[in-house]
Image 1 (cartoon, rainbow, N blue to C red):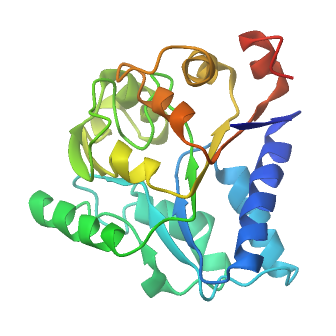
Image 2 (cartoon, rainbow, N blue to C red):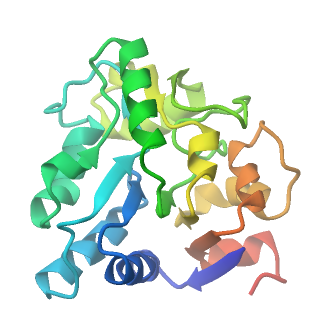
Length: 244
């Protein structure tokens, strides 16, 4: 495990971007696992800037997103298809046919089967993760099997509440999602876990110090040999004085 302590959200994005850009330069056709939400936004800003400055090209890169809400069309502003287009894809030269997300509207069994087959044919070089306040990664909620692959999940009440800030009301938040499983995430060659807010402190503690248990799905990451954690210094200091 490698820990990178940063002073602010902007530095967190820069540190994560440096790792990804280094990988793309050394392996232009690498496969990236991408995440959504507020956490990776600073990362995507840096990746866009690197493209604008001609530091890197994404023409040969393939990307796989962790998850998608069930029932949202791709052009719905709250879908993760829309999020990725508006926050990254439309600003860089990645080919649309090389960007993959689970379908939120296809028959669930077919959507799961299709995404499983795609992942089977592509090993992810770097998987980007945020972490939920309840320790979820992707949409793998507490109690999920560590052996799980792509699956349909009923979202935890805490996750629905946390994500309601993106919707007009709590009732508008989808109650289901299709997500990569824990086994899919752990199959990545390397993982970057980003933790940038105070309310993620307890979840991050379970990765660093707590028992490995399905009650905190992110705790399994401690067993990944290629894990890098990028987190704010003040959050890390509150967890353990011995980390920095």
